[in-house]
Amino acid sequence: MKLAWILWLAHVLPQPAADSLCLSTTVYLEARDQSALGQQAVAEVALRRRDSGQWGNNLCSVVTARKQFAPTIVSPQTRLSNTAAWEQAVSISFESERNWALPVGQRRQVVPGASYFAATGITGPIWGNALQVATIGDHTFFRVANPRS
Picture 1 (cartoon, rainbow, N blue to C red):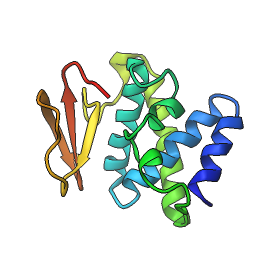
Picture 2 (picture 1 turned 30 degrees about the vertical axis):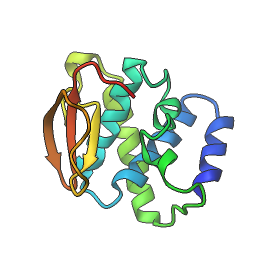
Picture 3 (picture 1 turned 90 degrees about the vertical axis):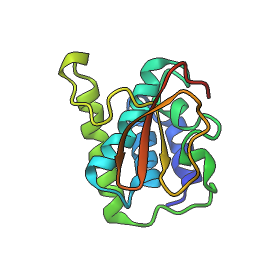
Picture 4 (picture 1 turned 60 degrees about the vertical axis):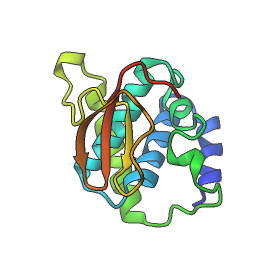
């Protein structure tokens, strides 16, 4: 299925189904070739950003904020064709949403405080105030004081 179709579907689905679809799509596009822990970390960043309200008040707004996550960076014609990776992304996204729905003190955090990540093969982040939280697979996760989109 094409990314454009998934994003259209997310606009017509009710909440929370739309958010689950947007998060699953992001985990797939950003981390389908990463470990389950790496995929959980990507989901956690999106969930943390939603909670901050800076990028939007729902997951679809967060992951489609201009140039923040893969759904707005890759071509809308991109096909999500790896069925096994899609199933894992959906499972991890649902698990991450359930975990994040717990009270703050009960949540299991993979990358505490991280609101950004970058592929390790790309030149370092442009955030001058970034603190590296973790590197998991091909991604490095950062906590940024006073983050700006």
